[in-house]
Amino acid sequence: MTELTHTHADLLQQRYGNQLKPEKIIMTPVVEAMLRHKSVRTFLPDALPEGAIETLVAAAQSASTSSALNQWSLVAVTDVALKNEIHDTVAREVKVDRIPWILEAPALLLWVADASRSAGITRDLGDEPLVLDYLDSFLMASVDASLAAQNAALAAESMGLGIVFLGVMRNIAKELATMINLPDHAFVSFGMALGRPDAERTSAIRPRPAQPVVLHYNRYNQEGYCDYVEDYEQAVSEFRTQQNMAAKTWKGALHNSMTSMQYLGGRKALHEMVVEKGFKLL
Image (cartoon, rainbow, N blue to C red; front, side, top):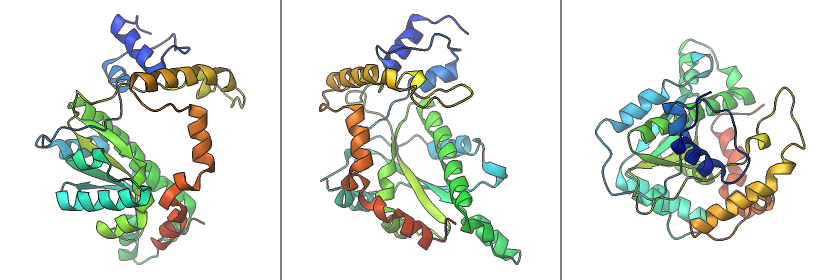
């Protein structure tokens, strides 16, 4: 454990607000960088630094990958016309006029859970990839893509770039697969807008729940979160007020996400699309 400086204490204040904070933190430059993470939805028109995408991929390839199978790919969309086509398709699905962070970002990164190479190499060796019919294969590739993308996000932030993850890409999963020519056994798990943040419009660090909400020792404490929800609601309220955001509670957001088919959007057809791409999910 390291003695917290004023800067470190301020970071924990931003991450947790006035909630219970961890008392024992081993603060390193990497941990500090992680605590500074925030989603960026406002970008400058600057081009990416030369070599930025290659650096992000090197960082992504340094993430753990299940059984060293390397079952993920990245489609880096830098062509403005294609990026706008993807934007327009998403905007129609979620029924908004525009999604500025997709339009402004110089690159849209599409993280692909990709077992297509595994299938192709297996067939080249004279067999059928029977294991890809099972749910774990889909999950394994999706986890690989997620781990790779998080490494890339940290690398981007270390270079002064900003990112925001885009689950909304799953709302147009079928159309997107056609647009970027995805083979069978490949699926865009999520997107990531990438660019240089506009400091004059970038939001602050969003608070997270106190650690007892998510941290369990040895066995899961099913009711453990209950004592901390109201403090988190207060932190959320203060953050949204400071950022001039519309009033919204965490519990309300959770409830809406669990009950609204409109929230689910085009993802209602996700199972059908994934099966069509060769993942039988047995």
